[in-house]
Amino acid sequence: MEVAEVKNERVSLTGEKTRPMKLNEVSSIQVARTKTDMEEFNRVLGGGVVPGSLVLIGGDPGIGKSTLLLQLSTQLSTIGTVLYVSGEESAQQIKLRAERLGDIDSEFYLYAETNMQSIRTEIEKIKPDFLIIDSIQTIMSPDISSVQGSVSQVREVTNELMQIAKTNNIATFIVGHMTKEGTLAGPRTLEHMVDTVLYFEGERQHTFRILRAVKNRFGSTNEIGIFEMQSQGLVEVLNPSEVFLEERLDGATGSAIVVTMEGTRPILAEVQALVTPTMFGNAKRTTTGLDFNRASLIMAVLEKRAGLLLQNQDAYLKSAGGVKLDEPAIDLAVAVALASSYKDKPTNPQECFIGEIGLTGEIRRVNRIEQRINEAAKLGFTKVYAPKNSLTGIKIPKEITVIGVTTIGEVLQKVFN
Image: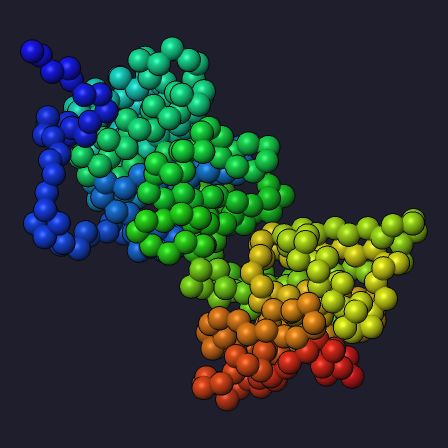
């Protein structure tokens, strides 16, 4: 009796099949990562590109995903063979952009195709070390009758790419489009199938772009890399704190500096608030780059625990520079910025604020406090307000004063004495 061929089993391009192995027989040799010339990109991936990994990069249209991967491809082609498959542009269009970004190596192959069967054939011929698919929604499998970009097509094509990547040690990057709601288009299983999910974020009005890891089997999640879009492509921003603070006005009310953690990296950012009397029955609340519910909670605590009458005030909050702040440690800076605008009193430009605020008005401990304080000292800040409970046993640089606080009322009294 003939045994039917099992579909979707893992078979390499040379025909070698995977087989069950005892755990103690599996090689535990550390896989060597391929480092690119972009340290920000290496940081987000966890130290470099892992052979055989499948990386999904999502972002809004026009944000620069193709530019990022084209720039990455030109660098990787000096290390190994790169196959760049585009279902959206012709080879001539891609070359025009590639020439602007830098020198093109002979091991950089372009292929304008949308048929997965044809793509697999070329992969077998070229045997690339790195594979780029731009984008997954434009690639179709002839075995599936549905249209390009449908749930079944995206799932089937991604599954086939995963088999190719894993069985042949080809590091594969696929571009995914975003929906209006800000999630990746296609089936939710897409994010579960890949090893790493990166979001490329930013506002088109700003030149800064943030590459954020939200899933990473080979490194830390919530790491970010910051780039600036220039005429020659994406340029790394190695000191983002300095960039985010360079346009800050001295003596302006409604401004406070926070030391936030993005993965393992401390970044200083400015929180801005504008509090004005409401002209209508219900007060208006608006946030940009900050969590709306968190801002509402902080305003309620300020009313109840600090005596600020905000119920008849409109409040507008934003994080300057386009960076998104969503960790609990930003609470204190948000509260101080609101109080500064409400009282019309500026904060000291050499002070910054770290701490989570509880519903009873207490300032709660945060993680990596020593790393945050060192970053503030490095950038010339002379005073930090931080949770008192977090300061036990840490080393404080001599050039900075750290004030341990326990309640929001205590902070406002010391800042706006």
